[in-house]
Image (cartoon, rainbow, N blue to C red; front, side):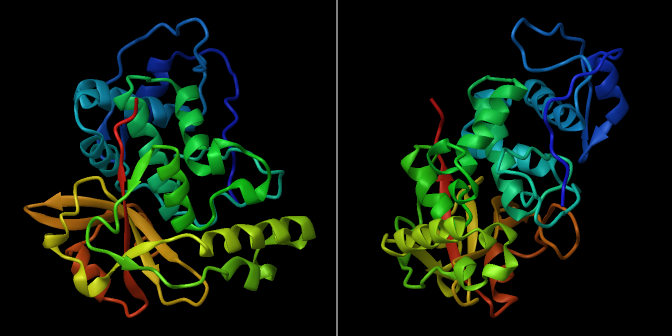
Length: 305
């Protein structure tokens, strides 16, 4: 279970004071300059810690002129700024009605990707605003960008890729990079109903079954792990979903491609190690370390307009 960020208000401190308090965040030094909040800005004089982190990312973007770079490079810069951020499982599962959960303080593999993409899009658009970041996060996380109950969240990552491709946020690049048809049937949630408290509601359960049926009717592609290498032309900032041998599940882990000394490695938030990290080995070698990792699906962020 995790706490939610609701943009709570407070008094008595400036944004500069709060950025000084957090000092160094995920290996990125925060050198904040005083700014006067503009009329209509979502940012308050006393932000939540999620707002502090969000603004630290925007300050990094300003210092490094990230807004002038391609979206893939921004993804890598923001993704690596999360290095060391603690891992937390089930960060989106709450007992409350479905609503946007904002948590930049601890991440799982999916929320790491979502938050990096949302922040990167804001930076590329020069929209340094907490409200706009929240809007982007909602757009990315929910089907058609609309919150309409538990089933509107994009639970299956191949579905996440397909929906965000339709929205123009990314390109489904697996087939282009030499992928082959993905023939697995996605049904894990409906077959493990007891593992999801929200599925105790029959209407929600049937909605999820509908999602699975629709997803299984669509064409999906993946790159078997034996074919993953430099010849696939995976790029900096590509989103990498790892397909799995787990019956009924499409993707079991997500992260980003990052190039180091000419080698594509995996930037991700794994349970093992407990924080955001970069794989010691190449992405290809990382896949080979487990028989349960069968390959990858690749999504390439599109320049926002």
